[in-house]
Image 1 (cartoon, protein in one colour):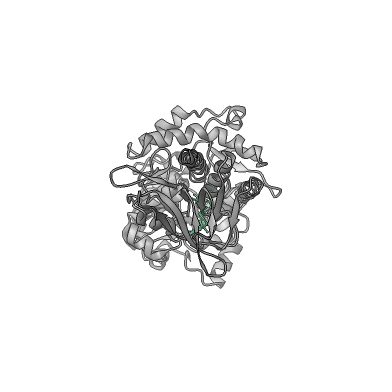
Image 2 (cartoon, rainbow, N blue to C red):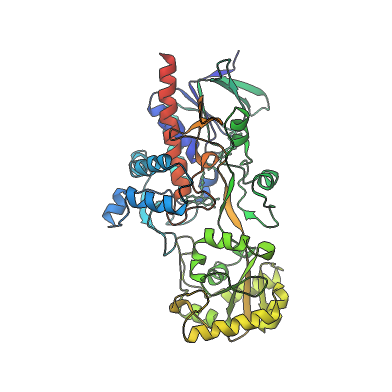
Length: 485
Ligand SMILES: Cc1cc2nc3c(=O)[nH]c(=O)nc-3n(C[C@H](O)[C@H](O)[C@H](O)COP(=O)(O)OP(=O)(O)OC[C@H]3O[C@@H](n4cnc5c(N)ncnc54)[C@H](O)[C@@H]3O)c2cc1C
């Protein structure tokens, strides 16, 4: 005899789970939502907002982005190594999802780019504190309130453990552990898995991606996101598809310093590997997925971003070259105070030296090569970047010590992918057949990017979470209704 009963159990209360629960309840289903943590919102509480294509904000801002354009970009970017039908459904729904969120009280600042070369698809949630990290927690709060209003029963501190199936192979329940540590069974006809991937589980990351957390991978590790959902789905018969890190480079240890320090070292100046060689047009550093990938390919999986005192002073006088919605302040006037803090606190990610030779030794970079690279680079600054064709406006010579360097390592927002789904967010087995009553959404089912996060359309990750949650919610509601008949 089950302890509880519902038509649909939504497993987890991040943006994908909350969206699934709201959508399913709006479509008439009786829903229980299980959340492992004491609060809902998941990783998205740290973020700023979802992607949309063709929203009324974009129309008003005269931003030329259509589903056709975004889909073509996406398919080219991923070499068609993804489910085009699913991507199309997600993009087609995304503009209406903005209105769906607005109807429950979410407000948006507008549609933004993350960095210059990206498209303005990032719909940043409006807060009472201006634009900034954690804005999306306001969206999660609105989703949560709407779920409660619709009668969704939310059980906090209640991690799900197992999907139960009947003799016909249909989902018939979920096992979980309640607040008191007691195992509970919830009878249901459908379950939607939305557990946010396994970014906080070093063993899972190692096993699935080959990276060693804290050694060559420095991703955000959101407590509770340890791969539960993916494992439950696999155990219930869903096919395994690759789990990836949703890569975004990490400036080791320097994000804790005043923002002027990472802000200066994120600028598109000289970037070298351990051999003292350049590896890319540094303008692309703003796309932190590309930067993380580039770092992953190097010896020691590390790159060094280097500036000299003249560059820093110029930035202090005139502001930095590139800002983003995350690092939006061009004023870096407290850079030198930041360096002093780094020295006092024994910061391991920032290096300072009077000469390039000394800097190379401190960083473990080949000294002779670095000197040669800087010589060549300084020549390019007088003419043309023969090596990586960087635009003239970003070519600033390095001539005057002290010099500063920051270690750039692979990082990310967590893991994406793992569970095979179809365009209805149904979990599918090795034969591509849906497992009746089993759905997945959000990071657990985000098999969208092939090997690299699609940062050219920013907000993709949360956009996928909300939209896939909705798709799973509406499909599950329809399924349970059919099952009742
Ligand atoms: C710092 C940061 C900033 C970001 N900013 C953005 C942004 O601005 N735009 C964007 O598109 N993306 C952003 N992202 C990524 C985005 O937040 C995620 O893609 C999104 O939150 C994924 O949603 P989700 O619902 O799949 O998982 P999550 O939001 O991670 O939620 C997963 C939930 O599952 C719960 N859970 C885990 N296991 C269980 C279990 N066994 N039973 C019950 N519950 C369980 C967890 O406690 C958690 O609440 C950011 C990520 C980070 C880390």
